[in-house]
Length: 64
Image (cartoon, rainbow, N blue to C red):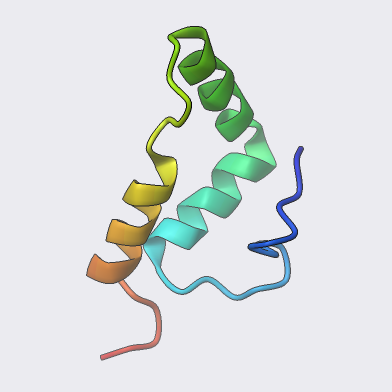
């Protein structure tokens, strides 16, 4: 499992649903499989960060 120091995802609390899903996919290894699949198809990015940000915006934790 890769650890992204810039996001510090293990110690930073989730801002919303997108961060929670990202933590789950990193812990289970799904993210690395998706990244490898995207690279195999010739794409530099799978679009995960955009979806994460949109889900955080739509479903934030702790803000009402």
